[in-house]
Image 1 (cartoon, one colour):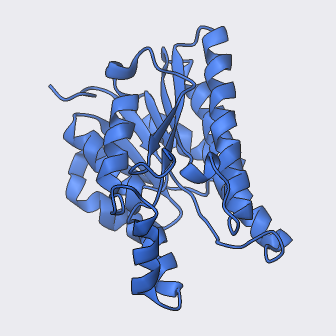
Image 2 (tube, rainbow, N blue to C red):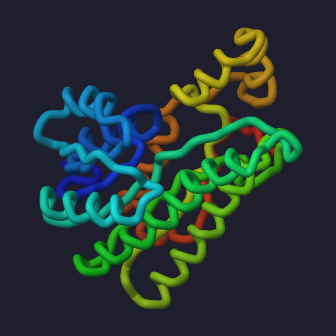
Length: 253
């Protein structure tokens, strides 16, 4: 028996990176998954090797009607949603002077608004079917500041405290819905790799990122997916409103 055998999940940002690897781990451990993403082509490619264990849903996480439709489609296809992983996100490395209002609104709409809408409609679905687990992807940038991460810091800090509010509300209402946040540092995902490639000296940029991490390497999507799997399983049944740091020791010093 897999660690989440018989459970059903909705994972956003599932076309690549952490969302894709989380979906794969869920399927390996016995769950059926609704994979959602705005990137329909990438979503189809990510889903192809997983067969009947997954369904794909084109999804704009910044739009409430799209969330309502995605949850409805997932419940129709899977019968319920026991697990919700708000993995989709974006980032832009700009300081407060360089960040435009357009930049700010875009980052906040995806990272903060998208997670808010996911939690809202995830709770509405889960409380009808006996509870579940919500895992929100924040970042170490939701714990500590960075001089050139104004919008990203703000959005991921919002995810951290939203998570705690959701957890306390669900506990107070006795919904049996847990909500926790995960805080990775530099993980080699397409988003981070693209950021490195856009730099003036990609090799130097990656080296500088790795030098900040006590373990002297960047993390992999697998590292984060394994933590998400734990928080989605009954192994974490007494864990809610907590934050889990996956940063190779970056915030320890």
